[in-house]
Image (tube, rainbow, N blue to C red; front, side, top):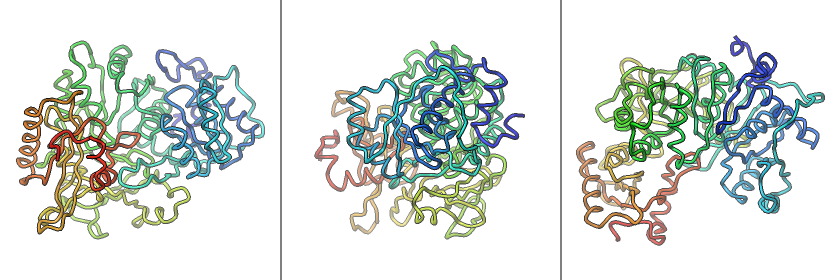
Length: 530
């Protein structure tokens, strides 16, 4: 009932603090935080920054990791009338400063235990922005003098990953958040009986909106973990120990889990109802390997979303075997309630089964990008639909399939090839850690050459004969699946492929590094060496 009429997530948290003050809001690293403690932290931080001069509409960059303090600051800034701007906390002072300038932030929020030298360094590169720390509160603070929460006001700015270009600040209102959380709760059948276990970063939308706001809204348990991949055992241990029913991660994390856990029998994940797979292309092989390895059946659900629709758009129904097309693409299901999807070719709706740009209409669609009218103008199609930049199609039953990004296609011999199809073929090779495909036009008759870069496990890397076998297997996989051979395959050291802070491939940057020769100069290519 609370979720059905609330106008903001802030109101939901406040109501839970009033009606169930001793109830558990979430647990972080085995330390529970009650609704009373959460609301105390929020109101104290709101009062503090209001007293220091934060005005309605002011932006505050949050350089905070997964923690209770993140929630105090995130909601505290909003309760004071400001706009929160979550960022990757490990990005460094120069990058934080650049982002603060980009969004015109007058405030940067850091953890209370930030060393004085680090704070001084940050202050030295900021152009007038104030650095403040967040810490637990002993009691609720007075909200006197603070403006009421306006549902139409911007709650936070989510910077897009910049996987195909410069980051853009998506303006998400309180109403956008509540609407999309309602959509996901209905579409994913989330209830108060669910137990969410999340190691996703709260500075990014899937980790923040789906994995914390949805459980807050319905009163489900939330177990929040640090995000390091080195703690993957902690993730699965937490699912087992707390009886987790709902977890989420990008495809890479599930692939990594299959490889990293040497004895899967150590973990009983049978309580899982949903293992959501989203935020990057979903591999059918990943679903098969994960469920087989851990003795599960139909728990992994592929999902699709984007910040411009707040976050969630569609998901494959839980407890249903995946639907896979002839090219290995996994369906991401049907849209959540109140969401419509059109497939566009040349700006017009396409027939069922035709591949085109995905357009989304939803009451949770945002109004545009912060201080970027040109990008905002290019976001919309018509009748409230936004253009996603993703390519896909709807099958005869209305199920959505994603085939790639508009900017990540390769025109080979007159045919359109999707980078993700090359990448999925290469990913199927055992020693491949991660891969990316780009197109480079060398002026030949065949058009663009498809180049594949595959990071290889091993430090030091495997022997040359082993590397040669890996390369041959990658080429064979691509030829078998797609009917042609790539122009060149490069095997690289781990970390050679540029990624965003939330784990998305940066194809444009990879292409720049290749064409400039930077990859070779830095010794990132391990085979072949020319």
